[in-house]
Length: 204
Length: 236
Image 1 (tube, helix red, strand yellow):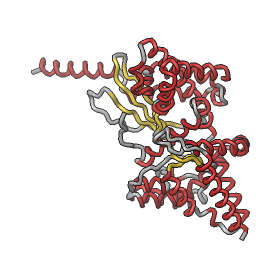
Image 2 (cartoon, rainbow over the protein chains, first blue to last red):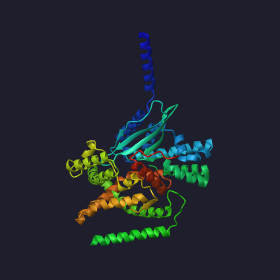
Image 3 (tube, one colour):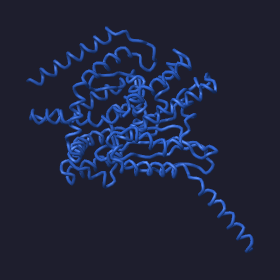
């Protein structure tokens, strides 16, 4: 009896420790969000509009948790199938640069917001989940901020961010689709990279 | 009687703009979800022109006004809006939300000093934002064609009717004291514009075509708010 008991106990301990090693998706979002907010709260430069510093923060803390290949595929819809592996790499890189700048810009608008984490509905074996948070700001209605996440070998990664119901990724679908129809996939790559160069030239 | 003249004039301008827009601009039937794109883009340009004047005023207001005062102003108008939100929640069959919104108005008007302080949020009454367009949406009325209006901004056809009802229900234009009414309307307008300034920056940088970006974001957002944050999954 005792050996059976200790065997069961051992298995239980083993499973919980394995589970604890890997962050659950909502724990991951909470950790990264709090990390970023703590830094932004103390950084007067970012708060006064220093996009460059905000980008550095995003690249260090936020980027590693995103799956940009999936995000690009999502933004391109069926056109993703038209792209060669080389084109896909270029598209993902350029789109990543664009998205990083967009998020970083949003961070410079920080005033005194706090984030509320809503309970995540997920089953033990799920490979995809939506983590829901809310950005609370004094004097206005809270803004929904949701993360679509998928479980990869390297851990949970974000593949879409939905702000107030607006998917930051699918918002590009029409524009991307139009460009591919007009100038092909290479045209699309050029369009995004031109935009990035433009933003780079104008950034503070 | 000055207001009646002003209303007639506004209506005349409005009608001219619409007729001019619809006949003058070729309606490009390119985009199935934006059949009046020609008209809309023209109105978008008009709006951008108006914003050249409005935006600096909003930026000035934003910079000069102390944060607590801005919050107070936002809370004051938010409290008035909560009354209409409550009514819309009831009309949508969301009685629990409606009752909560009525609670917000009572608490904020009394303890919150005529709405200047949003005490209700701190007590756990969540702030909702409902308008008649959303009510129509919940009742099953479809979006209709996408439209862009000067000053108002983007609206679906349904939401254009919705906003007309919202404006009719708005208590502030009904205030008899003209200077007070005009001050409040002006202040609310600038406060609303100022609240959108952070979003401006994101759109400027993120958008390839500002008109497209705003349209797509607006349509997605409306779909989400009609379903209170849980829109049904769209077909990929």
